[in-house]
Length: 158
Image 1 (cartoon, rainbow, N blue to C red):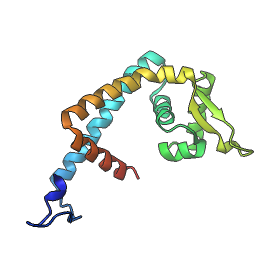
Image 2 (cartoon, helix red, strand yellow; image 1 turned 90 degrees about the vertical axis):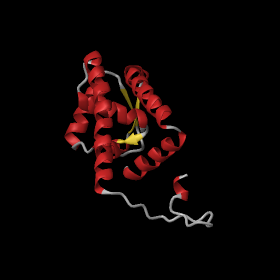
Image 3 (cartoon, rainbow, N blue to C red; image 1 turned 180 degrees about the vertical axis):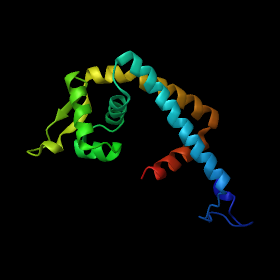
């Protein structure tokens, strides 16, 4: 077990929290993250041809799908999109009845966004494709690696 690597002989339960990684190992991790992003981008490119939506709109729909009930302000922060760009994309998705905006009080910026049934149906093939790829990778890597990768990605995205 990885936690046992830093233990001295005869010690149990104590783990040295230090982790020493060489630059080459970190560089390899970055390369793998970039390759993973390309896998997601390829799935979105395939969907782009089928849906007629542009890449930013599809990425926004994916963000809303996996993080529903976010406000417009929160989505702007999550995506890094400018306010005018986000407004344009949401307007396009709203026109196609792909997103639902729930008012969150008197402040219009507090609208919470979810995908409509039509939006969920449009995104479903992308989600299925990505789940399949991730399922295969997880099975190949094993349960311990899955837990470790989740922990690393969670820490990276905080």
